[in-house]
Amino acid sequence: MKLSSLSFGASSLGGVFHDISEKDGIKAVNVAIDNGVNFIDVSPYYGFTKAETVLGKALKKIPREKYFLSTKVGRFGADGVKSWDYSGERAKKSVYESLERLNIDYIDLINVHDIEFSDLQQVINETLPALHEMKAKGLVNHIGITGLPLAKLKYVVENTPKGTVESILSFCHYCLNDDALVEYIPFFEAHEIGIINASPLSMGLLSERGWPDWHPAEDVLKEQVVKAVNHCKSKGYRIEQLAMKFSVTNPKITTTLVSSANPENYLRNIQWIDEPQNETLLKEVLDILKPVSRLTWENT
Image 1 (cartoon, one colour):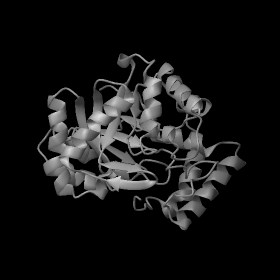
Image 2 (cartoon, rainbow, N blue to C red):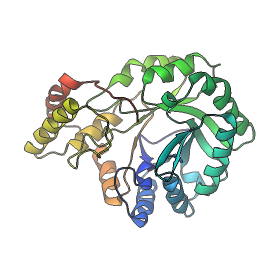
Image 3 (cartoon, helix red, strand yellow):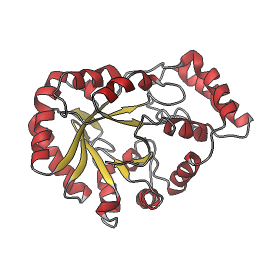
Image 4 (cartoon, rainbow, N blue to C red):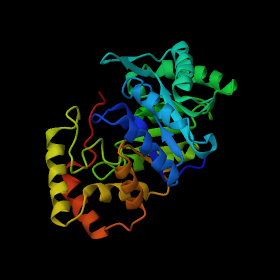
């Protein structure tokens, strides 16, 4: 798959960050595709199937050849309760459910979602083989894994035959406050693994609007980020623009996912990455964030 440098993260279509207008969400998908974005990532977990359902409505009117689509298995939820099931049978069932919700005949990339919640041996011995069964049936084209702890992504790649895992999706590890992904790029390159970066705004941390209530970052990190946001404001600049440009400029990262159900906001993201980086301000912000650089958190 040859992907655009910026991709559409559909988590926002599930109302993950705040309530959304379904009409605006569908329009945001179309704005992305109409402006050269060709990769969309979603999951049955986002909004507990809502994101896939809304995205499916949008995709009904978009030619299939205009986009690659990624969704996931393993992480679910209903009625406000999170759940996880990495069994092979549930993975296969999940593929069929996603195909129906998304109104498509095949999935370009299927991922094992947030492997840190799994028994990694089950992922290696059961989940991934089940997905390869789906690949043999022509229902999926490529197989990947996602997660927050980079070491766990590396472990699965190391302990499966070449070609079992074709890509990794890492989030919150290549952004202004955390660039830990760069330490793992040589390993993934050596194993011919495609690299997808997600959450260039660190799940809302790097924004003037501020993070959602559920954000798991420590207070010391949030306090330092506020200083960086205010510094950008004092220069008449939005930290979102600085962060977006930073995250898409590493040539070794195939694509960066950014999520917004607001069509105007998504178009602005596209415009931002086409503009030159403010190198002076970038250095100043990185200096502000240096005391909390790579300070991560546990996924929840």
